[in-house]
Amino acid sequence: MRELRDIQGLLRAFLQPLILPGDKVMDATAGRGRDTLFLSECVGPTGKVYALDIQEQALAETHRLLSDKGMADRVAFVLPRPCPLSGGCYGPAACRDL
Ligand SMILES: C[S@@+](CC[C@H](N)C(=O)[O-])C[C@H]1O[C@@H](n2cnc3c(N)ncnc32)[C@H](O)[C@@H]1O
Image 1: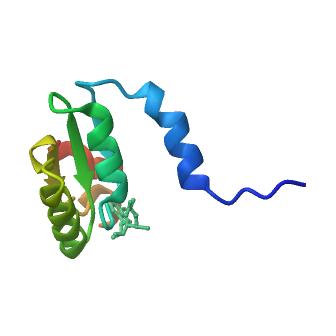
Image 2: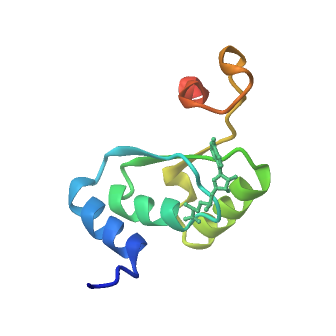
């Protein structure tokens, strides 16, 4: 049985041909920004990436990385608010601000 080691690489190889320059895409868990950076490269200068994270610190790190790479202007950094309709959890309703 073969081992699957590079799941992130596999996902990126799958996504890359599907995302076109000028597209608008969302990274629902920006974290340290590596996926946001990948998506920003895919959409190009005319596209937009909506990068969400419930941690301000994560958004700050993502912003720093994207700024260092000169791509911060392709990204909207979004701190979702808890949804009052679902007991205060962070669900799809958090995207209402986009
Ligand atoms: C493993 S990291 C994501 C890694 C990231 N994609 C990268 O490339 O660096 C997980 C992130 O998801 C965020 N997170 C967890 N639940 C979330 C939610 N409901 N909405 C948005 N962000 C969430 C956490 O704050 C954390 O920063």
